[in-house]
Length: 144
Ligand SMILES: [Zn+2]
Image 1 (tube, helix red, strand yellow):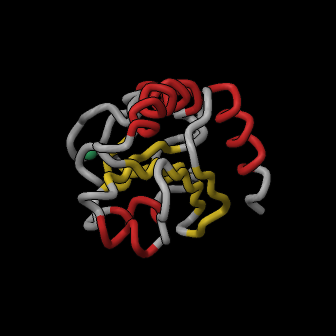
Image 2: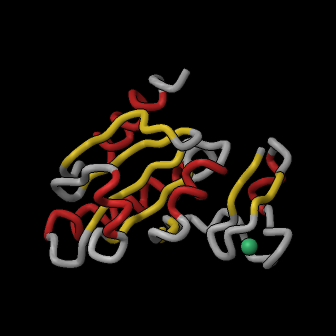
């Protein structure tokens, strides 16, 4: 499986078994599964969503947005649970304006599930963790 390092961006090939729990990046030696969403910018967004073999769930947020702040710990919690199946990433819409415009982000928080660079599904608004996991489960099934 190809997996982009959240720290240095290097693409790692890791075996598809339990060893991946302790997998380290071949370049920077940092842990690949940190349990935290990766912060993406305009510079690394496209590479990250297209070079991962796992689906990537992106949370578009902004510092001034109350519901985004409610969503942040929920997103992180679900990331910790599902990080071996889905990559979790965050885009600060104030910083990454090109990326936010390209995907037509009109309200935040917006979540978009990508698979090999393609948008699979999106969700606008914050959800509690159980509902978020339910939505992810349904969105994943649209990947064919
Ligand atoms: Zn690395």
